[in-house]
Image 1 (cartoon, rainbow, N blue to C red):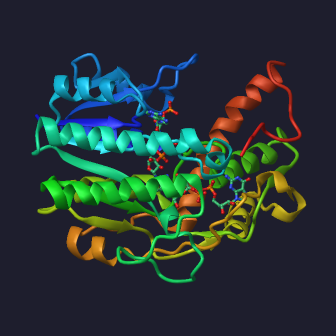
Image 2 (tube, rainbow, N blue to C red):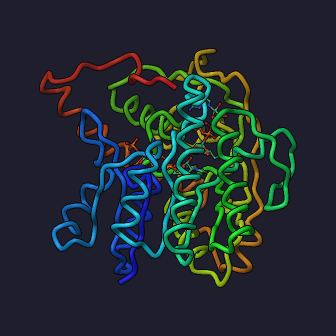
Length: 345
Ligand code: NAP
Ligand code: GDD
């Protein structure tokens, strides 16, 4: 039985990756941050199914704590490490620049040093990001495109990406960088734009919310389905050699396009409900991202199974179920309809 160690197991990607690895009979170990309220909702179904027999194991840790990570790696002796943990919200990284940077930077140094010192056979995956490109050119971006980070988040990801490559080249470690373009799902955090839209439109459609306030509607992203992308992580780690890989759909769409499809589902005109505010405008914006996944398709056999339109639909349908459950709480007087669902970024 192979053992995987995942930082960020409680996040969107960590939950999908755990499902894949548990299904492949891995023993999975994940780090959780201590918080005042329980933060394992994305993996609660996996905890019930797999933790009793010890196939899924959670450990308190934090990427800012090298000793804790090193102790865990010594104890677990994993075959593979997936470093998915990060303060992953780009706008928040402008508001908490040091914390956001330190999480990514300190985590990658600590983990790579531990691998180098403990066991050079351990494979290492780093969650790199299309944000590193900066999005100023209209180019189709691939593994050879230039990085031009526009936020503290992206600058720290460039550091982590470079360090992963440096440890691969300097010490012969199996270190992989997955440069993933935006990927979304019903498990996406609610302050990322796609989920903010699908939560809002479904609540609006049944009378629980009046308006939705957003920032830059002209931004365009290469949006795919998280489950498809996480399958790509597994393929990268099982390829014959470690490398840098772009995962993207090869299509780009604006926030307006996303709004139109989501509101059309309910035959609503998005312009009647959407406001804009400077509150959601970033100090520096990544305007346009479009990736070229040819290398991953050709060498890994990786493929996109879910189109942009299908992604919007599956997120809307999942959030509609959630909104209908919330409606019951409203009808029982336990919640009150709002102008807008609370949202901070
Ligand atoms: P996410 O849902 O925000 O999950 C982030 C995970 O990191 C959560 O488990 C979070 O724990 C954990 N975390 C945050 N701060 C930490 C710390 N100081 N120490 C340890 N763990 C910490 O992000 P995601 O969408 O799954 O993305 C996974 C990774 O891929 C991230 O590194 C992200 O930057 C990168 N990425 C994402 C995308 C995308 O489109 N989704 C694209 C490219 C790259 P809590 O649950 O306690 O908050
Ligand atoms: N979050 C948010 N909220 N974004 C908005 C809003 C809003 O109200 N209105 C417009 N946007 C625009 C942002 O300005 C940005 O251009 C775009 O929508 C996407 O924003 P996010 O969904 O927050 O994602 P992101 O592209 O900044 O970052 C995500 O993708 C990266 C990969 O490119 C995150 O998952 C990062 O962790 C990831 O690395």
